[in-house]
Amino acid sequence: MLDTRLQGLDRAVASPSDHELALRYAARIRFDAKEPFLPSAVGYSFFRESGSSASFPREIQLKENIAFAIEYAIWWDWDIGHLYELEHIWVYVDCDGLVVDAEASWHGGYNRMADDGQQPRFEDNRPALYSEPGKHAFAPSPRWLLERKAQTRASCGPRAGKMGLHVTPLFAGIIQERVPLNNRLVHTYLEGLRFEPSFDFSKEFDLREAILVPWRQLYEWIPRRISAWVEQLRHTIPPDQRRVLRIAHRGASAYARENSAEALRAAAALGADMVEIDIRATADDVPVVIHDSSLRRVYGIDGNVSDYSMNELRRFDTNQGKIISFEEAVSLCRRLALGLYLDIKQLSAQSAVALLETLDEHHYLRNTIFGSFRPDYLAHVKAARSDAQTSILFGAVNIDPVKLAQSIGADYVHPCWENRAEEPHRLLKPEWIEAVRKAELGIVCWHEERPSEIAALKALGVDAICSDKPELLV
Image 1 (cartoon, rainbow, N blue to C red):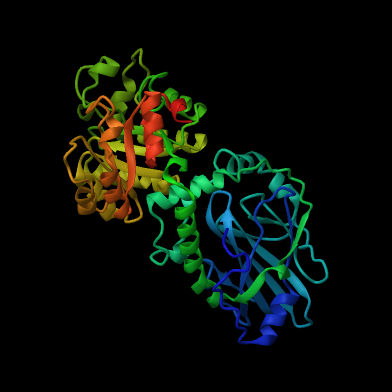
Image 2 (tube, rainbow, N blue to C red):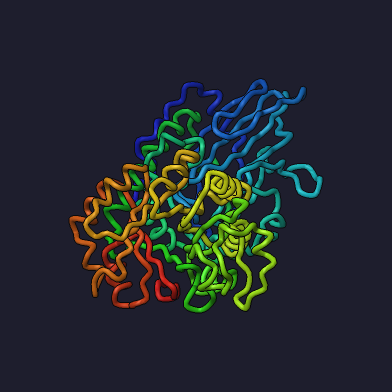
């Protein structure tokens, strides 16, 4: 694959003395015996007085006995979940040149590298740390990592690659490659590298073996590295080999009541990546999960969803179970590791705010795609949150999907053509797909239960397919 010696990285050393110190105090790291990814480059920064980090959202505080601190921003091309990884270690050195403290990053935050109140462990006056398999968060002892066995196994196995190209706030607006096709390519590549962690931390890595450069040089190089990887994946993974997102239509609705908690659980058990759920608002603007405006077909209740408050809907006792709120759906999907594909049927300004607030509270916005036949709904979501992913649904065959999507800044187009032809995949003509891809848009396809059609859609390299029977997509 790409040049392992990190072509294009500026390795000039402005201060030889700082470079020598960065090497001297670089950490020793113990990885899982089956770890597929090791660090390749490190950007270092020196703090000789307290100040703000340029690469991590924190302040570096120097106590009286500290002569300086070194921040190591450690680069991997890959985390098992996404393209590019940047973790951090902070080393505090006293006036005698001894390392007296160490901190390191951990899933968006950071911790002092001390276990159970003990002092951090040093070897040869250098920090000695452990790295989470596949994910690379740092710990002072294996105990921290063993406590996360279940999450780590899921990340390295069924969830491998699901995050695609993960753009952190540090590179927002700089890395431009986070588009649907690139996410599919990353997902495909990393799923092929999934592994079962051994939790045997016998693979030792000396950070001095990586290329160490001042942070600014690494920062300026990273976007070019991302572009190079994306270009390589585009050339080496043909359309018919790309991993398609498996979206369970209204949950696994062939096996449980549509849009129910049971349908969401069934979707997870049958290998879905996401669930398509329908969103409407109650009389008191609470978003709920239901397809029809009327309550009659599914619940046998007279009236519409918008006629009742959430509490009133809760009081109905039906054989079909209860209507679940959007908040309940998000909470359940997070536990099941299911992404959300929302088909917004009806939305008020107040319920739209509630929708976004719920996703923010659960930190689930990046796991969500907002879809609708209503362009105005999607434009409203995009205006409120520019980082939200949106998908425009349409039934007409002769519509211009690119112009429609671009008019509201959508990320995906979703033709609902399951009943438009005997073999609807033939409606996705090569020139149609080419125009959509040239516009960097993703393609979500209608719910499909015919194995021959599913195979044909996969061969075209679409991004996602919906199905009442998600196991057919596996």
